[in-house]
Amino acid sequence: MTLLDKTLSALGLMRVKAAKDWEAKFKLAVQDLAQQAVEIDEWKQIANDLGAIVEATKDDAERWRNKLARDAERRRRKRGDA
Image (cartoon, rainbow, N blue to C red; front, side, top):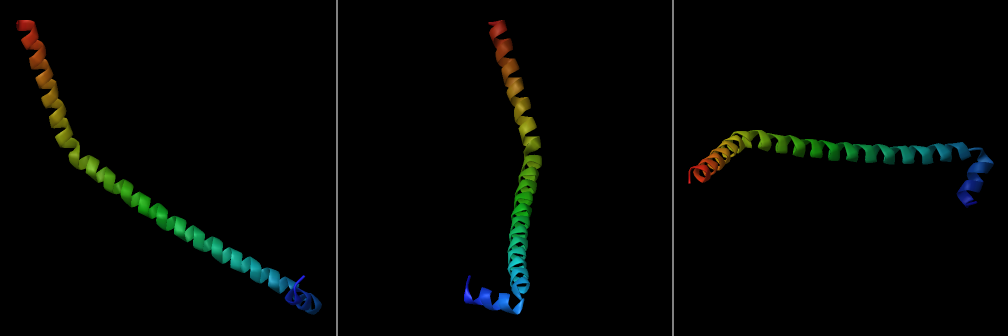
């Protein structure tokens, strides 16, 4: 037991010290949660950005799919005609 603990105990203030310790732990927990919330918001923004990129490239992807399908069909017909 430290001198502070002995003194607080003698004065009946041990509960005050325990409350202050709990308050400090609570403040740290709140800070950790706030940091996690910031990180979650950053990941949400990244996900939104990626979604926007996917949406923006859908038309190009569809055109390429159609072109590749037409090319494959031409090759099939060419082999069948030869």
